[in-house]
Length: 309
Image (cartoon, rainbow, N blue to C red; front, side, top):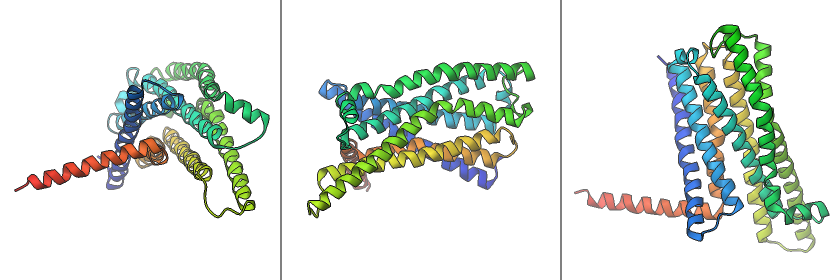
């Protein structure tokens, strides 16, 4: 049985996951519908659809893993469940980070204003540049999967099962976890760099506008600010995601502390659902589609109330 605090935290985590699935599902549906209508699949649509799909899978994985650990811990000591969850988490986690980085690079090259020849060269080859994070993803998988196979094999040899984390030395276990997350560090650093450069571009643009004595925001300034909000929110939420993953990882060394694990699960789920709603609010096409949906929902509720005698 769960305590009141554990139950509340679990409710928060499940609510975040449901909202995340709805938000990311909406993003994927709008982009797929738009591509079918226009008979054209752009690179940004591919990134948004792939990002939404990977985050839906990530949310389901977080909740499934959490419920199994909380209510059916014996399942972790038999079968290959740990293998499936571990490999799926590596694929979905790193795919989500790389696609989010591609989105950050897209905003940067589309909106930032620099006269340097390298920036202009990259801007002209936008679609090719967006494939760089995906290349980093493949390289990361080549290094991460052998490491995961070695960790699982070591655990089986040491404990005769798929688990055995509680019997593993804490320092070695934490070293394993750090090595498995190295694949997300480089894309995250790339996102930080694009965010920093976009801030510089906005600062230069605002200074130029002041020198020209214009007292209003032009469309370029608005685009800068919207892109910065998306990038900065990604950095903050992804930092929280890392904190949540670290808490869940530390829970392996204290499996009896359920509050710690559920808190980590709730913190981890903030990133995949929170950033999806920020993308909806920051993207004109997605925002208009969401307003249409809300309008239809309100009309449906009004008609339903009128039918009640």
